[in-house]
Every structure is written in C-alpha cells, then in structure tokens.
Image 1 (cartoon, rainbow, N blue to C red):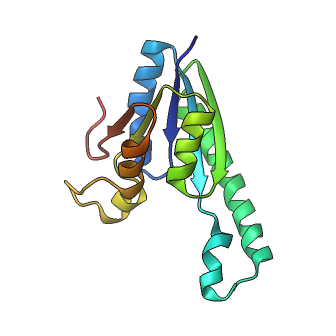
Image 2 (tube, helix red, strand yellow):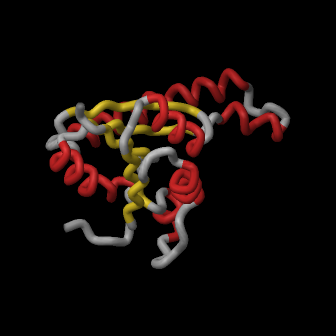
Length: 156
C-alpha cells in the first residue's frame, strides 16, 4: 500500500520551499502526494462589514480565485513534483487549519509536509521568526506526523 503525503500550500514562495523535501520523501517511499490549497471563505468575513460588497460579488470573486489556484497548483505540481509517482490536487474553502486536518483524516494521509511559515514570512521575512499560526496549529493538532520545513533553509 503506497503512503500518502499531504502538502498544504497557499502558493507563497515560502510554501513552495517544501517541494524538495516532498520529492525526496515521495521518491524514497514511493508515496502519493496530495497537494492542498485552502481558500478563505470570504463570505463568512463580510457580515462584520454590513454585507458589503454583495454576497453574489464575493462568490464570483471566490470562484475566480479557486479556479486560478487550481490552475496554478496543477502547473506547480507538473513542473516541480514530476518525480512523484502520483500527485493529486484538492482545492477547498474555509479555515485552513480545520480543512488541512479534515483532509489528513478523510484522505487517510500518513504525513503532512509544509513550511513553518507561508505568506507572512514572504511579507515580513524576518530570519528566526516563530512558526506561523497555521503551521503551529496543524503540528499541535494533527493525527499524523507533521514535517515542518524552514523556509529560510537552502534546498540541497
């Protein structure tokens, strides 16, 4: 039975730094890779602002974002995870921590591999900064082992 690695990414430059580790693990253990993008549910954020803009407009934008993320993630997988025996892509919407943990359980993954920081590190870029909120919560609550890759580390 092949192993399955879950790679949650928000497509930031930092999150892509997990790819060499995923390639290495997938090749060594003949693992399947599940690439996961979780978009925030924008409709759940706007009621605090009086439902402006309209829910229909938000849904339209969210649909565009999900399609764009799917296209970009498939391209990244084709370009950078080509040595993996089997790669699939999932695009979800909601709270990133909850969706990552749900995917780990529902997809019967054996390991989660992600960077310790994502967009926030790309924007701030402070060396030695702590783990990001999503990485910290996933590592704390995951039912399977989590490998956190330092986005500052140079790939071998």
